[in-house]
Length: 195
Image (cartoon, rainbow, N blue to C red; front, side):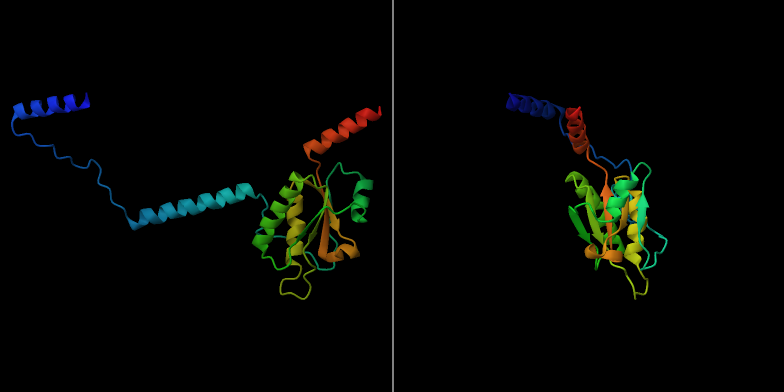
């Protein structure tokens, strides 16, 4: 059928005589300039930066410096004093560990964010971040100061405190994480069965 239509079309053109295709002019002159390429690249880079900020909410252009010998401590409202005391004394089992030695600030920022996210997915309640004391450096306790600034920014972190000596002392920090929804349901069911 398609061949019949093509034949009919050719016959009709033959009856018209000398048929030439119409020349088409561009309606818009397209000129690629170097400036357009630069602005496109700038927009792409800005979008990548924005996406990175959305994925990792930890800000840290400037953090308050912490002395290498200062303990780190933080507790959200609602965390019971006994729970916080047990965390501080290292009585909870450490289910996950992150070592930030030899990390740059930016790679440490990414690592802390991903570590907390992974701990939540694995139902980890207590974890340990080893950041070092940072004494004798040009910028003393830089990673320790960053960890102190970043952890309160994460809603999943309920509390943190400098670790006990056998876990790293002033160069490490215990973190207490929020229960996952599944753990909450398990607790609720367990407590309802007792009644």
